[in-house]
Image 1 (cartoon, rainbow, N blue to C red):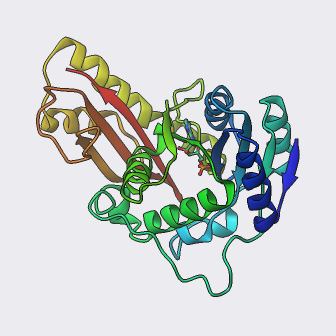
Image 2 (image 1 turned 45 degrees about the horizontal axis):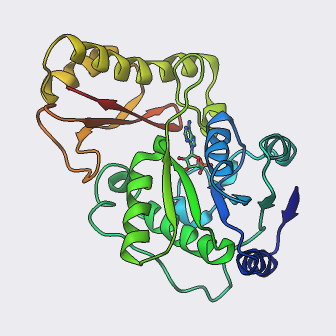
Length: 276
Ligand code: AMP
């Protein structure tokens, strides 16, 4: 497995692979890799000749008082996971933007609600880094997790709008044994907070189970969730159309239930598919 830290070298490698007719698979990450990332890597591995994983904690997608400075890293463990999963190359640049970088990718509408409401510059940062990474890595396919459900929808939109010839693949959300959605940020949680975090997935699963027994509207879903949820602050709880991401009031077709909540200083997100 190669490790490349230089953006222009990364692009030369990618262009030469494409000239040789190889298909490039790509999984962009911020590192501190876990089984959720591994599941994306496995999906990508089965669909390409050459698999690239990027590891870059992208300052552009963090707000002013967010956890950019404390975001966890572990290069050795990341390299071990990538070797085990058959990754061909890790792209781990120290920096990614030229000093006079001046182009930002802004997706309208989809980014205005949910995570975009509490993190107003987040998706611009995500789309800008993904666009730049796509230019350097030249992927044929790229895999993103449904864990970041809104992010996946936003990336699908921008790739479609900018006519990028890249197949965007969504991968299912992976949970820990206690139900908590795997996230690099889970390591901020102390044991008591971990128990609080479990109530997020417990609430989602309860709604899913209740829907199997009886019809529910969004009002009753909110009530049920609030009975179970033990977090320090609920950012949002939304039932949305899975493609358009607009709120629905009745669960009469497949719907996505999304929660974002604070446990201590840690913002956690989770979501589940609801079927009537
Ligand atoms: P991150 O390193 O948090 O930026 O995540 C990189 C990619 O991994 C994104 O596409 C995430 O949606 C995905 N991902 C992170 N956690 C999970 C998870 N628990 N299940 C599935 N995908 C995940």
